[in-house]
Image 1 (cartoon, rainbow, N blue to C red):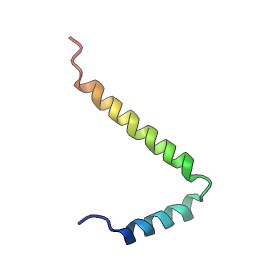
Image 2 (cartoon, one colour):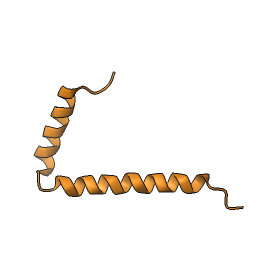
Image 3 (cartoon, rainbow, N blue to C red):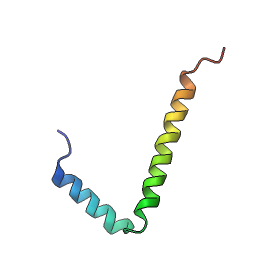
Length: 50
């Protein structure tokens, strides 16, 4: 029940139509930063400080 190639192409086309090709790199950077911040926050909760 995964996402196939046809579904991925439809998603990419919709994103291109909504945001435009010029804004995609900035959008990708923002998503990457968000994922990195989330990972860092979850790691901080696992480290015992005492």
